[in-house]
Amino acid sequence: MPEPQRVVIVGVGLLGGSLGLALRRRTRARVIGLSHRPATVRRARRRGVFHEGFTDSARALPGADVVVFCTPVETIVPLARRFAARLKPGALVMDVGSVKGPIVEGMKSVFHGGGTALFIGAHPMAGSEKSGVENAAADLFVGATCALTPAADTPPAALRRAADFWRSVGAHPVVVSPSVHDRAVALVSHLPHLIADALALTAGRWGQNPSERKALRSLAAGSFRDATRVAGADPDLWRGIFDSNAAPLGRAARDFQRTLGGLVARRWPRPELRAAQRFHDEFLRG
Image 1 (cartoon, rainbow, N blue to C red):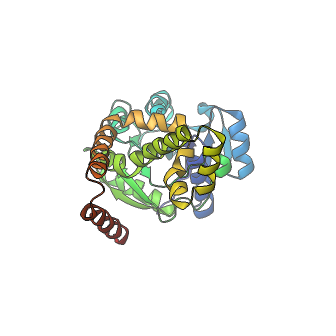
Image 2: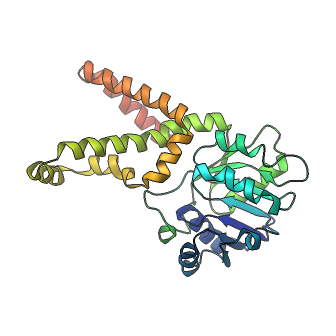
Image 3: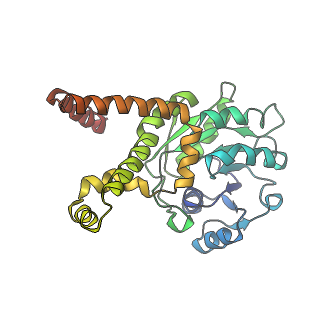
């Protein structure tokens, strides 16, 4: 693809840092980092995340061909509104937020008309329960699906640019509507996080005395570690995600509660356990 001359990454934590490392390793783009925390810029500079790093948007944004917001979901639209006047017409603006409907809708009032930048929502399905630029990895997006959620009036050429951008860092772009995306990730991403939190809380409440806590530590094996791994993620970040996708997540959680309650009430019937096994095996096979 014709590689962008200047890519600005807003927020250089795990995802932003990984994106910068990937771009520097795999493309010829000039990578610019923007963070409001000087300490974050210093850490990212030591990791080699960007060519230049700034805390001042007036220095980072002018001339950008591509801008990618890698900040918490609830901050993306407000930041875009603050920065929009600094972006040149035709610049491609994307985000990496794991909720798309509210962001795509909010961006309609920020970028509209022929004389503005172009926004396309993006969600690379990659990450970790760890956070911070110190955990960034250049290969984080390799082989990962990246959902692109264009609006109805998104120019096809802009969508192709977005797809080419994510391919350049090793991701596999797929196009999906914002509403379908949000309902799907409520089930396959957000609900698993919420279940991990609930399981960790349940275990923590049971193991209140030293003998119980010792038994938990001694007997917990792979199933517990796997099921609670993502409970180690940043709670502030995930509360923002839960809030932003509250309606689809609420429906998914209620469905899960009914299913779990039914399994318990019917004493875990074998046909349903087999059905779960079949779905699991078919899902893994694709």
